[in-house]
Length: 402
Ligand code: NDP
Image 1 (cartoon, rainbow, N blue to C red):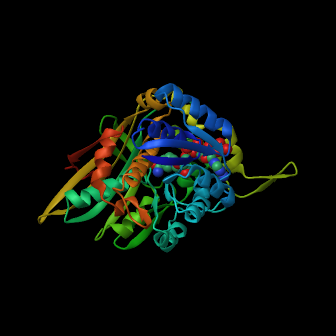
Image 2: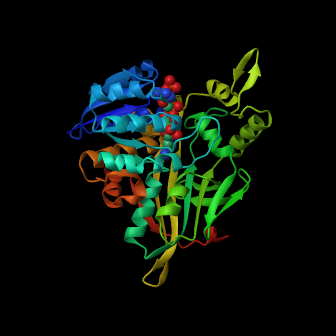
Image 3: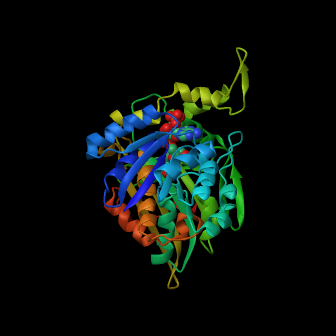
């Protein structure tokens, strides 16, 4: 039915390749391309073992637009799934524009020198995508991604007006390493060491990094300390959920993780500016990345679960209503299925669903869109079918009102 080009052969790229291969009716041809062909080859082998399908592989430097254009012209995909790094978003979008191909990613564009977590550069492509009659679907991972779909679904099904949203992301798993990040260390550490920020009554309120935290009682895993962070979906949801009064994002971190991070920060290892070392210039965070375990290698002994979802408070038929929508994902089960831990799994399944909706012409818009702008119902159904089932419960607790 359709061709897909996946760019990026990391932890998330591995899941995307496996999940596309599981749906031959939709993805008749799959090409996985990345900077390092060896990584593509390993994934190709794993996909063959798990599904019996042989996917094609290619080498590409996605920072180089002409190279990416050439690859797209050769593959002729209906959609490009970008699961390289946020630094490549704009160059891959440029290549899609030049070749008239739909685009999906899971993280907003980031300039290399300053962490920003802003959509403005990608939103600026809207008119160009629109005039070409193609679609760019932004932030279609789990968070951002599924959390945005949960918001659109709650809005459509349960509320006349959503007043507050709290997005809660818990990883209650254990990988057995003293310190490791679950996805690309550079992006992960940049996200956590920046100031926290949330939105209330029309204003952004800034906090120090990990300054605010509380114990939230997560389903299936129990109470876990959760810290307020800024996360990129807050920016698009503030724009697209009308009448919203407050939105916050929370993520769990263990004491052990925070202590390691604090030490690394205090000694300058999380810096993203260049420093002189032995006559060379190095970026400490990039050097740290080279020392830490590769996130795609963490799956082997990973145990425990992730629980990610949204708590809503608002009004339906004149009455207050609170709802919690969430997914629970088991690290070991993900590893059994696709040889990846649950963080890569939860991020890798949603862009595959997005690609299916685009190929099947169910999500058919021209321009640049965040997932909450599209009909959430087919996506919610497909989450249940493709490995990320969700639950919805009434949520009477007032714990989030502090
Ligand atoms: P990894 O670092 O494991 O993988 C990134 C891959 O992209 C690597 O194979 C890397 O190649 C490749 N790559 C980097 N630069 C280029 C380039 N210029 N050209 C071609 N390939 C390139 O990261 P993850 O798989 O953990 O994450 C992938 C993306 O998913 C990130 O953008 C991350 O922010 C996002 N993400 C989103 C989540 C969500 O829920 N929304 C959750 C988790 C991740 P090489 O091996 O040569 O370095």
